[in-house]
Each structure stands twice: as C-alpha cells, then as structure tokens.
Image (tube, rainbow, N blue to C red; front, top):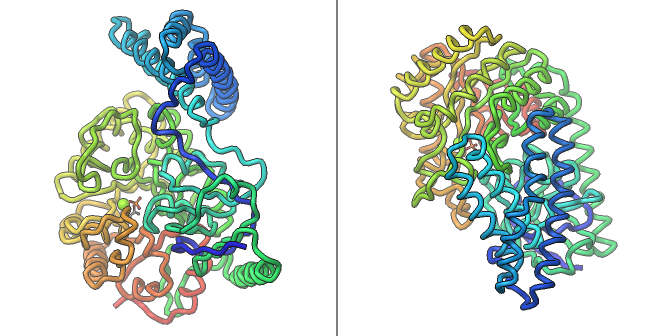
Length: 540
Ligand code: PEP
Ligand code: MG
C-alpha cells in the first residue's frame, strides 16, 4: 500500500481504479531515420483520424444537426487530398519525422487557402489546420481524449479547463492532480460534478499506476494506492457514513429555503453545460444562479455559432421548467483560453483582456451570445449577467447593446423573450461603486473567487499562494456587506455565486448582510437548506 497526501478541493470518498491522464507532447517526435517507417506511422495516424472524425460526424449530426456535421465531412475529405498527402510524403523522404511533415504541410496549405480570394476556400484554411493538428496529436500519442471503459479515478499532472470539459464526466469517480489550486476552474468543475478531488498531491505518475486500485479521501486530503484490507474497510465505512449523512439531508428535499424568521433565500446552482441540469434537478436547486457559458467555448476548434448557443441555452431553460436561469456571458481569458479567437498572450492575463472587455470590443463575439440568450428567453425565465464589470459606462454600453439586439430580433421576426439584466460584482471597483451600479441593473451576483483574488492581489491559479488566498479576509467580508447594502438600498436582489457562497460557516452571516440568493454546486444545496431552515437570523 502507498499512502500520500494533497489538498482537498472537494469532499467525499471514492474507491476505484486509477486512470492516468497524459498530456500531449510538447515536442514533436523526431524521425526514427527510416522514411518507410515514418510514412507508415503517418498512414496509420491518418486512419485513426478518419475513425475519430467519423465518430464526431455521427455525434454532431445527432446532437446538433446535419448542417454542422458537414464541416466534419469536409475535414474527412481533406484526409484524402492528394496535394497534402504528396507534400507529407516528400517531406518524409527528405528526412522529416511523420509529425513534423504533417504539421508543416498543414501550415503550408492552410496559409495557401487563407490567401485565396474565394470566401469559401479562405474558410477552409481552418479545416486544413484542424485536420493536420489532429494527425499530429495522434502521432504524439494522443488518441483523442481519455477513453475510460469503466468508472475510475483520474490522476493527472494538472488539468486545464479545456481538458476538463472534454473528459468523460460520467465515468470519473474522483480527480487527483499533482498541481492545481483549489480555487481553479478545474476544482470548481469537480464540485459541480460532486466528486472528491485532491490537488497538489505528491502522487507519482508512473506507468505502473494505471489500473491499480485507489482510494481518495477528499475529507482529509489523503489517497491510497493498493490499500491494504484494513484501510479499504475503514474507507468503505467512511464512504457509507458520508452516504448516510447525505440521506439524512433528504428530509430537506422539496422544502422551501426559509429561515425560522420567515426570510426566503433562493438556493440556486452553478453549472457549466446543459448536461449539468440533471445534477441541478438531482440536487434540488431552485434555479440556476450561474451558467458559466465559457465552458461551451472550451475544448473545441471553432467558436459555437448563435444556433449552437441558442440550443444549449434553450435546453437548460426548458430543463429548468420555469425556474430562473442566470446565464453569464462569455468570461474567456485568464486560465480559460481558446486558440480560435487569436488573442495575444499577455503578461498579466488575470488583469488583462478577459470577460466583458472582450465582448464590448468584439461585436462578432458579443452579438451571437446576446441573440441566443434573448431567443432562449422565449422558452422560460432567463436572466443574463456580465462578468468583470468595473465601471458604470460598461453597464450603460451593455444595456444599449441589448436594446439594439432586441430591436434587431423584432425586425427579423425572430421570437425572443425578456431577460433581467444583472452584473457580476467581482472586482473591488464594482464593489466600491455598487451604489451607482445598483441603480442601473436588476440584480447583483457576487463572484467571490475573483473578488478575493483582486482584493487581496493574489493569483487564484497560483497553487503556492493557496495559504494566502483567504476569502474570509475582513476586507472581502466588508466589500460583501457593502454590496448587499447597495442592492437593498436600490431595491434589487443580490446573490453570491462564487465558491464562498457554499461556505456553511458564513450562511447566517450572508443572511444578516441581506443576501437573497446563494448559488452553489448542485451537491451542496440540501446542506445549505438545512442551515437556512434552522436559522433564526434575519437581515440587519
Ligand atoms: C467568481 O469569480 O467568483 C465567479 C463565480 O466566476 P469564475 O469563478 O468563473 O471566475
Ligand atoms: Mg469570476
């Protein structure tokens, strides 16, 4: 038995086989010196790419529609493009490795397409690049995401948000990473999935770990590889006790979240994709307080279209059957990156081009989102909120933009509904200007993850700083109190959707401050409802 430790990012006990996740290689494999063998490697990778694309084609056709699936069909045809194949073969004959030849040929033809006058051919540049990078990835040992036949415990060096969204969520029993901070988006996703997770562990990712029995204890931050009988029995008992406490919370299912003093608190859930609605309903949340829409953009090669966004939002809104759904517009940037927007690398990404700053600058990114949101609002109760607000002018510009979108949809005869407009209060500037901002919007939702980061000047992604990242810091709590007071004065509702909202030691404090809503991971709802129902406090 091997015992190790890490930092718990979400509680619970999981028992299962280890699946080790390996990242793509950072350097392309060199040629083995035999052109024939390199050509054979390329041919095999090309066939693997074809099988992957075929599967993707079927999935897209089923889930999104024939028209979107045709893009994949075009990519499959490119696998047989004679010019491309000839270029690869020539480079290999000249001594290049298969991966290098695939990459260089892809770049050459992509540049050639991009330079054409014909708009259709120009647009194919992205497809060529996409197909060749798929082949390169395969040649680097990436078989198209992690394949898990059985449920298991995912062990990795670290996971980016885009890697996390592509994982087979229904198969993962726990996350164990060597790096990662407990405030990162990957840890947040583990909480949404309601599975134990440990970050900053001392686990070694050697080849022998794969398939071994593991136990993860997310309560005290320990893991065991090949546990002995006594440890396994003790952990099974701990797991059963946790299940028993969860069963006791079932008494609160379906009950209104009202304090003994009669104060109603809306207990909502945070989600990242339409798939998470199942967890929201299972968790008995009363609505969705934060749909992190950027997760719809991660792990793909092109931005979702208005139609795709609309379908995703409509699925969520319909799934929630009349309960409120707060959609947050794209908060890309900082740790959540996509290549296809072509954004420059930055010295200080957390202070940089992210969230609403990108949307206010780029009509082509903002417009499809707002059109999709208003269109989805025709199917239920939708609110929209905007991340990373710092100034009043931003809010005014957003409101004017929303008005324009509604007029546009009306002129085009496209059905749409009304949506409450709110802002995330997650910068000290927005908190300090909350009195003025409250007069402009319908609600506030406090992002305590970023509010803590920016108030304390501590990068939430930096694992070394976890000890200093203190969301209970008096400065953060003073801002939280100020924000709620501003909202109450203006007569708008206010909630907390950052991770602090789920902290049971502060629930009563938040009620006293005057918060109306707490939006938390779906698995935390019943626990907080119990606290609320047993509480005798009221807003002060
Ligand atoms: C926050 O900052 O608290 C928040 C909810 O947004 P995110 O964690 O996605 O930045
Ligand atoms: Mg935030």
